[in-house]
Each structure stands twice: as structure tokens, then as C-alpha cells.
Length: 104
Image (cartoon, rainbow, N blue to C red):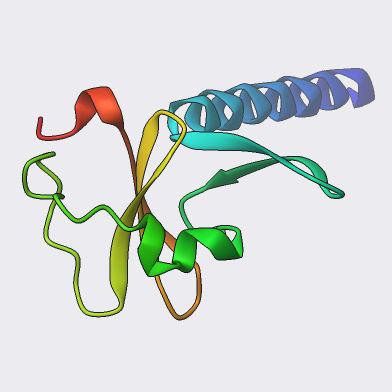
């Protein structure tokens, strides 16, 4: 009986791990190589490096790129192959979209 309970617990743990790995793979993310900090993967809810909070990197023609209107204190920036909506005061990623999916 102990081994049957043990095996079912392991099976459940494996299924949960596979399910969360599959979900994570569907979530858009970007891997950044930060000097002195190494590689870091960022996704929605994470904070962007400071430079992406600057107005100089803001996408001004978001409407032509079929991106939604940024609210007050938000801006769209381009990071690798993604459009990223950033909350300027906090640096938090509010949305991340593949460039190829913009406007769909």
C-alpha cells in the first residue's frame, strides 16, 4: 500500500511539473544578457532594465504597429522580437507581444 501511494504521488508531481512547463513555454518572454548580471529571462509582471523606462526608447507610432493605446505612465518599447508595454514609474511589464502577432 505504501508503494502504491508513493507511486501515485510521484505521478501527480510529474503531471503538475509538465503542465506548468507547458504553460510557461506559451508565455512570451525575452532573455537579456546584462553586463555584470549575466543572462536573465523577463516576462509579464517582471521589471525591465532602467533604459526601457526612458522616453527615448518609447515607440511613438504604436498605432501604425497595431498596438493598443498606452495609458498615462505607460509606453511601448521594442525588446528583441517583442513589443513590451511598460509601466514607466515602476518598470513593470504589463504586456508582451510577439512582433509577428501585433494587431491580430
